[in-house]
Length: 204
Image (cartoon, rainbow, N blue to C red):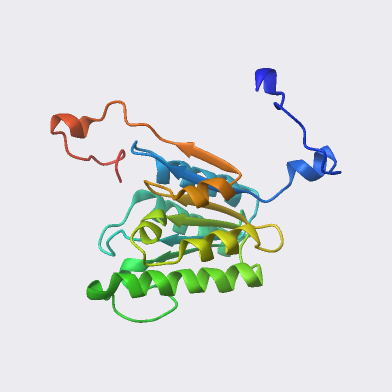
């Protein structure tokens, strides 16, 4: 894409403005660090545009609170108080999902993941959010906790103008095929390789 010019322009009858404003399905995958970090960076941009944001965090422990959660929840409060930016809802599977009002069920992660996906499907059908972060969602797909074909068809056929970003290693080829933007983070070097543990401000 030299000098910002596209390699080709599809003969789809859309104007440049219409093509610029198409809703995107994005995937951040690969073995390198930064997949979720990049997704939450996009969420910050979405908030600045006043978009409604839904975060659905799969796999991570309910007891582990990442820095982005604190920041985005503070921005949600700022929106509620002043109208600045957009609303943000943060849901974490490890705590039993916020809408289910139940304790986390460590013995049945698969059921929790399936429940989370069904709720996301309902919200997509209702056009509930403008921007969705499905963090570490590649893992429930890889482990058979949710049906990949159902995920792919639902996302490909979602109505309205809803952006979705999915993070996690080993993205299924069917998801990669239907996505509009796929970034693969490559592992080149990492402090972990030399025994250095995660640190504040970098890992959380």
